[in-house]
Image 1 (tube, rainbow, N blue to C red):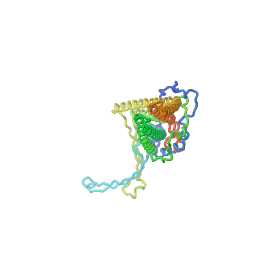
Image 2: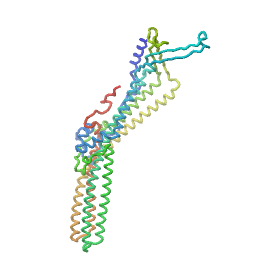
Image 3: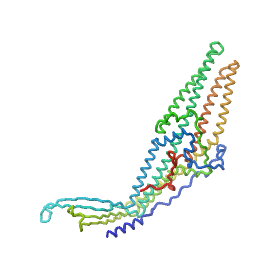
Image 4: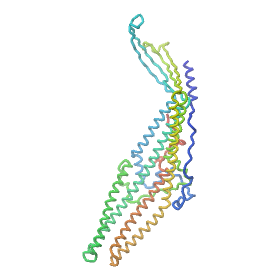
Length: 489
């Protein structure tokens, strides 16, 4: 009888290999197959060929050695990235639990039952004490997954596990981009601080010169007060950029998760080696490699598997309980011949009276899948827009740089001529003042454009999915279902 029961269990387990989940089909990408074209995208014309950003490690993209060390520190110490990694461990454990339910799990138990029968109901009207020792090995309430309900739940847990790995890679990409941007902002603000310091020094020198001219009667009180306004304006900028650099350092330390050594910081954008130039390629299909899109697709696949579990709930469930053991009224006789016991208890549960609840649950799972379809499509549209915006900046920032540099040169010449005319008494100091203000603004604008050019490369690398595969100098494989192995059970 026991052998027959084992044979039946094996046959049922072999049959329980299918699911009732609908066949998964990846939704079509709701974006054009090619990138936008037009005057703003002249540097992304068709014909360019380059490696996908997702295949370029961040150490290869960020060529500045100091920035590389700062990013490496962030990958080791950032707490948000630690949480993302711990979420992977959590979902791996959840998947293993769901996978284990598929198989019958034997358990062993021993017990002692002792009870007293009173004389009123005992044999020969005598009170008796009964003691029973039990030892058994068996399977308790194992649901045979004949219609794939548990297997569908296992597939859903697997996809959620993949989603957490994609989330970790997405968090790493965002972290690297934020660290690089904050590092660049700090360098730009330090350069602005140096410009404010040099401007204040020049303005104070000019104010001292005009004050002497005023004392000699060669300059008016208006010229003196106008010079003083420029001195005070420079002091305001000095205090402002001093605060900016301090808050930038605080932001960078938070991202890194530890204080950044001062020797790793840069005082200007020129001191930072430019990142590697990128091309998005010819097709927008590269977006499908982005971890956030892979994460959205994993959630969609998990919702698709849940439909299979909801469908299987309409069918009868089969639960089996078995045990093999011994029973004796003496501990010494527990394993003697003739003390063996066994049980085989199959149970069938037919859902007859809860069909309304099951139908509602099925409709909810279908609606959930459609929600994830919409979210998946929206993530692709958002990614396309982010890349298109980055390409628009990339195609025009060179012209901005050229024009801004010409503006600085022209403003410097204007200031030189205005200062000479004022010194020779040809023009008023107001002309010099306007020329100084224009030059200072143009110089600040040049710093901003230079920052925008480098920051756009950082952003383009991020939105194309770059930086998620390399951890502390070691390349790792992404967690897409097509390439990543399932967690061991």
